Image 1 (spheres, rainbow, N blue to C red):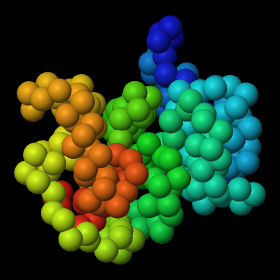
Image 2 (tube, rainbow, N blue to C red):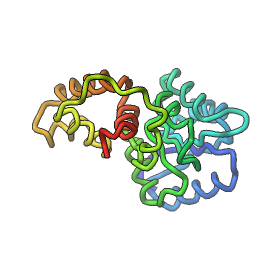
Image 3 (cartoon, rainbow, N blue to C red):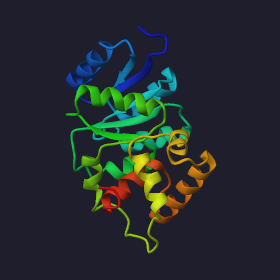
Image 4 (cartoon, rainbow, N blue to C red):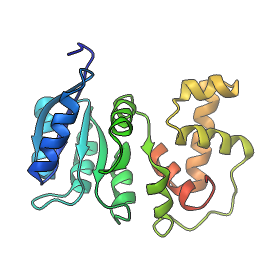
Length: 210
């Protein structure tokens, strides 16, 4: 096991799913599963106790759903990043989960390599949102604003959608990190969102990103 292994907890109400995810991650020395929870209430308590890098969170669970748990972790200022892992590609909880503070959203049928990549990205605080999921949010996003994104804002947003950090965006576009942050502030304002994940989801939903 690498000393730099990413630590995570698995939250799902199905023991078979938890066992499968635990086995998958334990097979790779880059990850360490610290614990499991069967609902959102347990997840919040476990995250507080174990302080993982990433929480793999199911959304629909008896005894405490994922959205409420994400909101509570955000309220508590938890260090852990939350990566939603669900069966539902049309789940109406998608946008609420992201708005509650989830770093990303994946489907349970995602290939193993994609899941590993997503957890690594989430651990670094990068947005993880598959276009297939994001495109289904069109009915959930807010009505389009009157002000369109500039060409540079679209470039920044496209890089954000790929999980690119502010520093890497700055390097690729030959601008400063401060300028990247300014563009993001303008993008959030125009799209009516508060963070990177919601901006990407809304942009896919409105067809700004294809």
